[in-house]
Image (cartoon, rainbow over all chains, first blue to last red; front, side, top):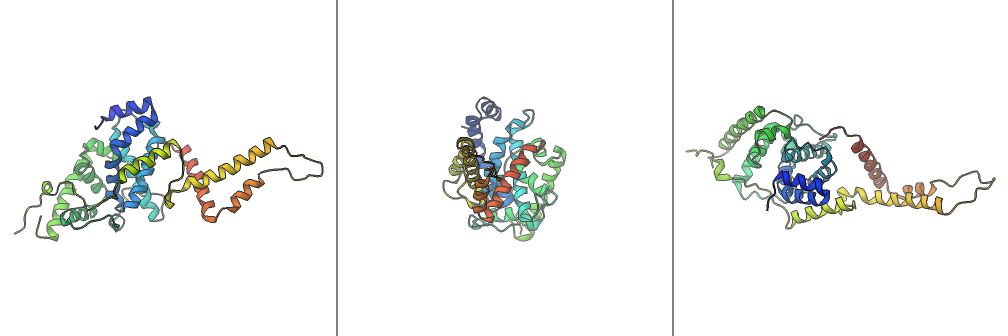
Length: 183
Length: 117
């Protein structure tokens, strides 16, 4: 049974470990897949996911309940993903502006199945996007986040993320149509 | 003739997969780390393993100092200090020594993080 975020927060305030387990149950999959879409490689996504949840647990006292729990969690996950990608480039971390296609378009590992060509091409199309558009698209399309929440994750505004999403969709359609007959 | 691209047809499928039982394993490993911060089995995140070892070495040395009070004679110019700690540290490989440095640097970073989140 999926819990509401406010119930999870309440549970953590009452009993940190027990409440955190509820958060983990609710968010382990969406957070992992969000990370995986950024870092691509499963082993990296696993490491980042573990680190993300540890940071959530350690820093939960800093969570401001006037903000979205989901956005806060995804912000941490995004930051940790950027930190890993930064390390791969010999930096402390990357910002969304640092991400380029050679970082984004990483080689997938054994946990990649391109037999579903449609799904594979969509991911490739997404990875061609500038980082902020990629983030906006992924959070809206896969995680069905509100623009206000996406803005909290990206450190931007809802209007800006709405525009990023629209542009991202257009670019994806154009990319896929220019690379094949169509889906 | 090109067909119109249709997001609804694709849905949310992705070409990525995970090992069987991965999410259950992720959950249990995270909870284990929280309840008892022990080393992860993965080489890439074994930071607690040698941290625990050095901590035990330090604790053992402190216990030794407190429980076995060495006789400090006038001739004894060198006080009994953290020689064992230093020995334990020197016995670690360069890689493990670096791990320890990273652990404590990271802990220092965490304690001084200002509204990172």
